[in-house]
Length: 211
Image (cartoon, rainbow, N blue to C red; front, side):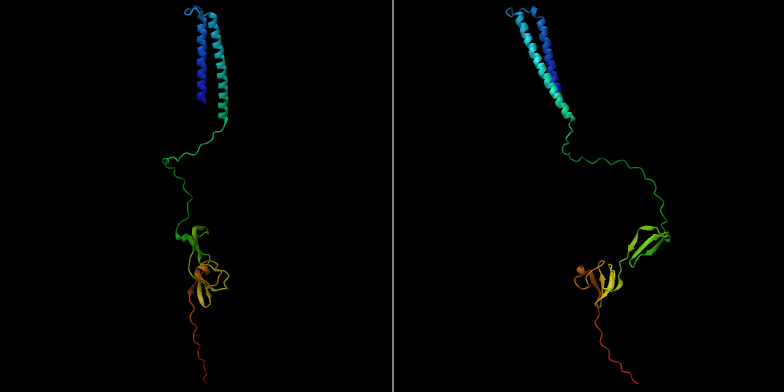
């Protein structure tokens, strides 16, 4: 838009130069004798018409230029509408290595003499410092069978607990199974037989006391 405004201004300047040249010819018209049939008055009338035409063209160009400047001002005040995002650029070079960080707080002595082991339950053991400060990652669950009692009489069952049911020993495959052992597949009930019940023994003969 700015380039068009500059072009219009150049055309206006060219017309003004033409007008100046015509005025110069008018001042020298008294000396022109090449065409004796043409009177000075006619030449002056033509020059006057040309000046009027130039004036009209000048006004038209001025109006057009003003309108274009208004349009440019309106465009410049509008917010730019972002275009679609371009393709991703190439990865930049790696930056310079950063400065070394500050030293951390001194840790506790790492010898085993400053550790103690606390048994939280039958399977959970926690390692702490002697002052009771927990050790990060020091909670360990030991997975091993532990007999809890008869099924239905145990208030809470955890994975790997053993219970007695229908003469057999069953091991829990998950925490808090709700179905009875042997009532379905291990995947469904959460129980697997650990020790199968033995056969019933034979009745013994009565003992007769001898006197």
